[in-house]
Every structure is written in C-alpha cells, then in structure tokens.
Image (cartoon, rainbow, N blue to C red):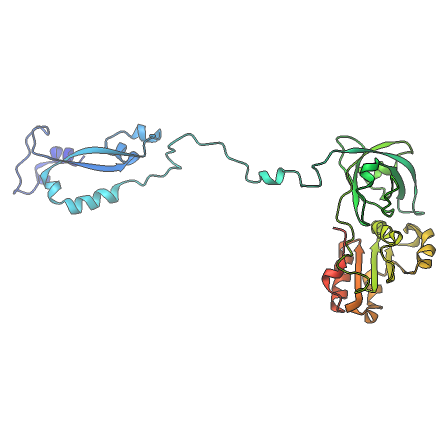
Length: 344
C-alpha cells in the first residue's frame, strides 16, 4: 500500500530528492522487499483479502511480502512503529478460528440426583390402618407394613421414609413415629392432611398399597451426649414434630436421664398422642404442654435458670423459629451447641 501510494501521489508527495525518482511503472521501480509476519486477519486486510478475514481463516498467522520504496525503508523505525500500531487486534470472538462448540450446561451438577435421597429402588408398603390422631387439625395415625429387609434399616429414632401414592407422584417425607423394633415389619406414621401427597395418604383405606423408600436420615444421634455426661435431657416438639420425639421416648434410649418434654401445639384439640401422655409420665418423662398464644421457647425461658448446661443435652424437632430460639437460649445457659441434637 505504501508503494502504491507513492506511485500514485502527485509530485508534491514524492520522496526526498536524495532518492531516485520512481519510474512510471511500479514494477521497474527500485524497491526493497521485506517479510512482515502479521496475524492472519491483519495480513489478509493488508493484502486486500477482507472477505477471507471475515470468514475466519483457520491459520493462526501468515507471512506476506511487502514491496516498499527505499524512502520507506530509510525511515524504518518510524514506519515500523506506524505499521505495528496500525495493525488491527485479532479478536477470536469476532473472527472465530473454528466452529463454536455447543455450550455446556453451567449448572449440570444441580440436575444430578442427591445421593441417598433419590438413587434407590422403591418398595411397596401396605396400609394396615388409618385413623385420626387428634380431634381436629387433620392429623392421621397411619400404620404401614413393609418388607422385612426394609424394616431392618430402621435402627435409630428420628429416621424417616419417603412415601408416594403413584409411580410418577411427588414423594412425601414422613418421620417414623414408632420405636425401632427389629422383630416388627410395621411402621407407625403421623401424617398431617395437606394438599398433595400427604393428603392422599390420609385418604387411603386399609389394604391400599403405596410406594416406600428405604429408611433414611441419621436419626437422633445421642452418642455424643451419653447419659453419664448428660443426666438431663430436654425434648422440644411442635405440631407433627412430636412424631420422631415420640419414637425416642418409647425406644428406651433415654433411660437413666431426667427427661422433660416441651410439647407445643395451637390447641389441645389438634394435639396428637394425648392418650399416651400418662404413660410417658409414668415412665419418668415430665410433659410441659404448651398451647397458643404461648410458644415453646417462652416456656423454656421460665425454666432455663434451672438448667445445668454442663450436664444437659437437648433433642429438637419442629418449626425452624422454635428450634433456633431454643438453641440460642440453651447455649446462653451453657449447653454446648453440639449437644443440641436434631434428626437432619
């Protein structure tokens, strides 16, 4: 381009007089050849191949021979600087070197099943009985019979199963209310009738079959709070959260401890297992019944001054607000947070 510019320029733009005047034909003109290595797109543009550049040449670089007038060569330092600064920057996004590969999912891992919760084979459970567990509120006590091998997976109070009423139905997570018993193939469940699978379960008659998962969850792990260290056990439950707490009480795992249960519901009419409270108290469990407008955490505050934090553990199941407030009050009283035990 520099050569052609000089050849076509008017006399006023001719090279300095100390160089020979170029001939009429640029071919016979005294020139100097030099090889300039440019990026592919820049080289294509310098040679007038803009269309090839737009299509994205598949070479990474190219060499081109440019014929320059000696005047241009003489000012090589300035010309080279101008030449380098005038090169367009190669942007792969604008001129791809190869067809773009399909974009991979950025959140593909989130689509994978959660280990232990979805990667299992469904079994079948048969409804043995289905009866109201409270006068009001839609709570049902449902007993199901499961395969013996599945029943052996229930080893600790606080564990749960998934149930579904159809193969393509959304499962409900239900805590087991009965105590672990290796000799039994029946689970007692406390289910609240709500929209969806839970409501469908509460409507099933005896003899109906449902899908059931293996027994899941860690349960209430008391190994970090043995009776020798924690002679006092405080239990906290609200609503249907009494289900796994009931399995703990009836399991015998609390023997040798001073046990108090704070059980909160909106009213006595919606309270489950009221007919068992006398049995629990006979077994040494003090029951503090809490109904609205009082909250379980408020009932604890009246007793927290008598708590010996070094010898106390707590087991909780219920509303998040309740568990958080109770744990805050207990840790303030000196109970280590790791001894505030939950089943998830």
